Length: 179
Image (cartoon, rainbow, N blue to C red; front, side, top):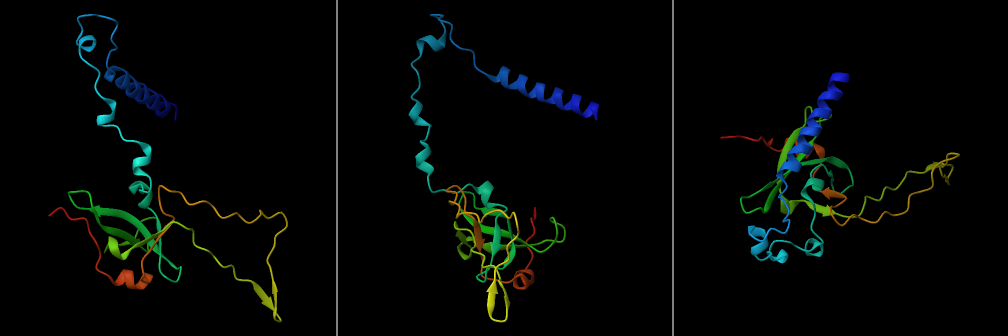
């Protein structure tokens, strides 16, 4: 265990050293240096404002989203996004079944068949009814019901694809081929 900690510390030190070496030196007032004689580049040519991308979603957050059907039944999760060479997303790879990725059936579906939803699924809790009167299940010391959370603008809450688990498993399996 100690050896692993030492190796991790050395690896971290090596990474920090490479970052320090990669930094460009600052101008120290030398009149003959190129930095002192060349004009400063315009910062706005490659920089973008944070508001320019408002409303876009992070692909890293879309992968892993839960997928539900129209009946709010969980049918799988998004494993990957497939895009063409221009960067346009063409398909969504959905993983169905399996446990921790083992035995999972992958299916690629066109992006236009998947609907992304920002609001969380509203679960309607089943109440216990006895003799026509509804009882609410309460537990002493239970946490209060969570207030409606504000949706995150950088990724949706879940995806909706209108198919059951069995229908998805019956679809042709998607495989990452290198042919």
